[in-house]
Length: 210
Image (cartoon, rainbow, N blue to C red; front, side):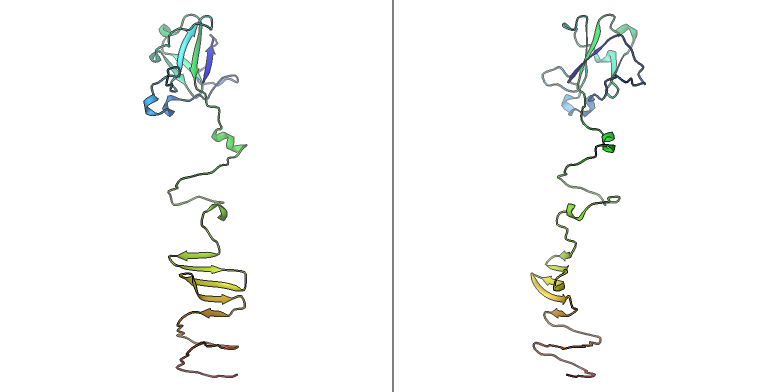
C-alpha cells in the first residue's frame, strides 16, 4: 500500500503527466465481501482512503466516498463539487498500487512459466507447440484400447501389437511376419523363399521353383 500526498497542483483528468503515479488496484478486483472495504480497516480492501492534513502528522477522518471520484488507472482524484473540496491542507490517499508486469511488458521481456489445470476448446489458432510439450504424445506410435502401431528406424520398421503381443511386423528390408491365420484374397508373388510354419492351403498355384 502507498500513501499519496496531493498538493494544490491540479492536473487535467485526461492527460497523464511524466511524474504522475498510476496503476492502482481497483476495488473491483477484491473478493465480494471486501468490495466496499477501504485500505485502512483491520481487514482491508482496495477502496482508497482519502484524508486531509495540515502538518502531515495528524489527519482528518476519511472523506465520504460520495464526495469524490478516484481513477485507479490514472491516479486522478476529483471532488464532486467545490463545496466538498478541502479548503486547506494537503490531501492524502492511501491506496494499493500494482507493481507487477503488464501485457505491454511482453514486447520486451516475454513470458515463461507453467500451467496446471485443464483447457477446454477446439485448439483453433494454437501454433508452435512442441511435441515435448504435450504429455503422453509419441510421434512414432498410435494407440487405441489394447492395440498399438509403431514405427522405428531399427531392424523392425513397423510393429502392430495387441495385448502386448506383436501380431504383425515389417522388417527394415521389407520382409514381414504375421501371427495367426492370414488370408490373401488377391495375388501373392514371392521372389525369394516362402517359409511356412504349420499348414498351408492353396487353391491355385501358378508356378513353383526352387
